[in-house]
Image 1 (cartoon, rainbow, N blue to C red):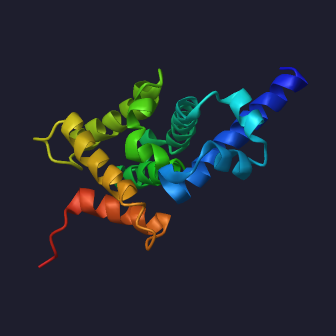
Image 2: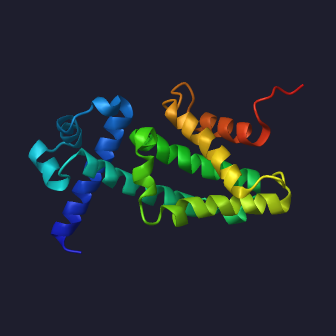
Image 3: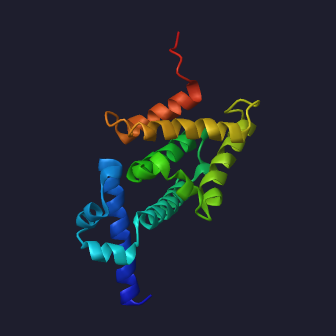
Length: 188
């Protein structure tokens, strides 16, 4: 990779990271000019990298898939007891989802359009649920796809609530895992 290509990649990554942070804080109200300012570049430079907001959102979606795929791989889900694997998975999703909060609102389609999304993100989760059913950690009568839908709903709900700023990442992770594994019924 040439120095020019490396600089271009670093600048594009800086723009994506700045846009993700700004959009997570201020939502859809942030303009392309606001994003350029947050990235420390001029508006013309921003438009040389991303011709419009949709192109920038697609780049954010691609970056989110790639980052989450790395975190899921590093979580080593296959070699941890189910409860620990679920906690690691949830931590990876919440950390990435909090960074790319703007995508949790209406960019899920962009994320799902990534060519590796199913293989890198969905298949490992399905595999984890299959293993948990086989080991008896989860009920036998529920399919991995249903469990995936239920789990995803909890995660999306938590992220959609703005990540409930009163809770830190670890508290949110613990809440999601507890609700998924034990429901919301008070112990009695």
